[in-house]
Length: 344
Image 1 (cartoon, rainbow, N blue to C red):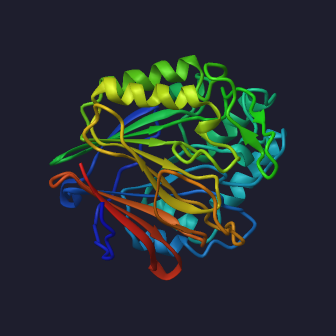
Image 2 (cartoon, rainbow, N blue to C red):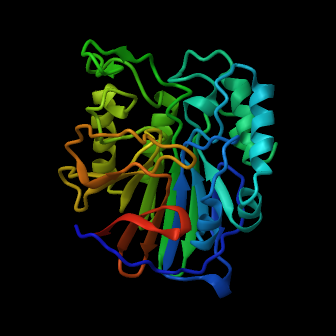
C-alpha cells in the first residue's frame, strides 16, 4: 500500500433512489470510470459544520451518513424527528441535499440510546423518523422491515458499485462490561450474542453471494477491525467478526470495503482474509463537528499510517477501469489530512 498525496477532481451526479434495493444509472453526460463516495459521522446539529462546502466541492456521486447524524439520546421519536428537521435546514447541508443522493445508517445517539442495541424500547418509532429524514418513500419495503439496513447499486460504463448499509443497533446483543480499568467493554463469550441479527445476516450473505459488482461497500456505524480500544466495536463479538470474514471469502464478492464511524477519530485499518486476493480495508471517518481532540494513542494492530483527530469527512474514489481505490480524509478548506491507495 502507498500514501497518495494528490487529489483527483471527478464530475459525476447520481440520481436519487429511496427504495430498499435501488439501482442508480448515472446520466450519460456525467458517466465516468470513477465513482466517488463522500461519508462522515458524529455531527451535532446544533454545532456549526464547516465541512459541507468541502463535501460539495468534492463533487461526490453519493453522500453516506455513517451514524450519529444528530445527538438525540432520547426515547421520544417525535423529538428526534424535530432534530432531523433542523439538520435538514442546516446551511450547506440543505444545498448538498439538492445536488447529491444521500443514504446512510444510524449509530447510538441518533438511534436514541447511548451504546444502545436491541433492548431499546423505542427503536421502531426511531426507525420511522430516521427513514423520514432520508426521504425514504412511505411505500418502500424499508418501512415494513425491522432495522434500517439497505442495498444501493450504481451502474457505470466500466462496471458497478454496490453499497450495503448495515444496521449495527437494532438487533445487537448486550455488551460485556470491561474488567480492565480504562476500558468500557471487552469481548464477550465466543459464539454468544449478535451484531446484525439472523434476518440481517441472511440478507447480507445473499447480497454478497449474488453480487456482480466490481466493488461492494459495507457501511458499519462501528469499527470492524480495530478491536483493542475498549469501546464499541465488532471485536466485542469476535465470532461475528469471523462470520463476516467467512462470508466475504465464500461469497467471492469483489472489492469489499468497510466504511465506519463512531470514534471521533479517523484512521485506516486493513487485514488479510485467507482465500481473498485483496486486503479488507476499514476506513473510519469521524467526526464532522467534534473530535477526540485529547487523543494520545490507542492500540490497533490493523492500523495503517497515523490517526487523524481533526474534524473531517472521508472520500473514496473508485476507479472501475484500473480497479484502484483512493481513500482520503478531508478537513476544512479541502485539506487532505491523510490518504491511502489500494489496488484491487
